[in-house]
Image 1 (cartoon, rainbow, N blue to C red):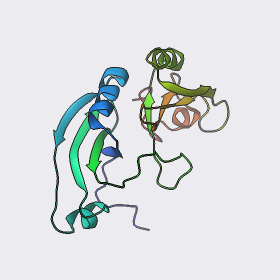
Image 2 (cartoon, rainbow, N blue to C red):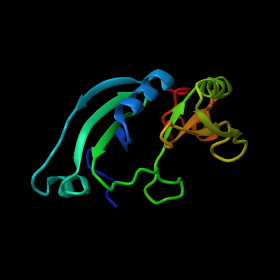
Image 3 (tube, rainbow, N blue to C red):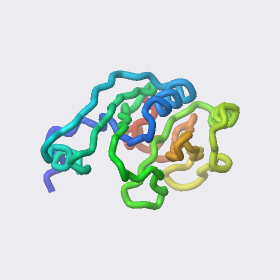
Image 4 (cartoon, rainbow, N blue to C red):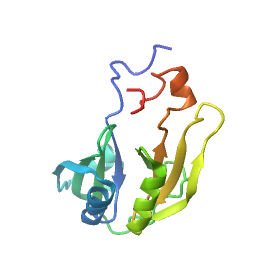
Length: 175
């Protein structure tokens, strides 16, 4: 083993496809508190560029790609495609390739109450991890208006793993 990807510096961003980029942006900016960094698009190709480079139907059109940033951590990009027949139902968390985005908050109970006040579907009560490497973590899933799963995490005193090894994971507590 050579130690991984040559020149690896860290995680830059994650990307999500949304059904309506304007509604998604309003949710992430107005409710979550993110900022728009930039946007580009549309992208249309007459050849097989979309299939070769993005693994989508060659006639798919990216209406807009919008990059958002939420305080610290990686940015994320939102894509809105125009393609008849594209699935409109978000993946289940157990589906291969499914993803979610976790937001670090200082007080998860205050954040959950805020989400509920804004009509956001919070999935149960926060779970408190008390054993193992994630001891000290509290987390809860919630859904964006279009059904995408998101997560709140809070560990004001750190987690066992980062208390034992501060560089094991990025943490706003230990950084």
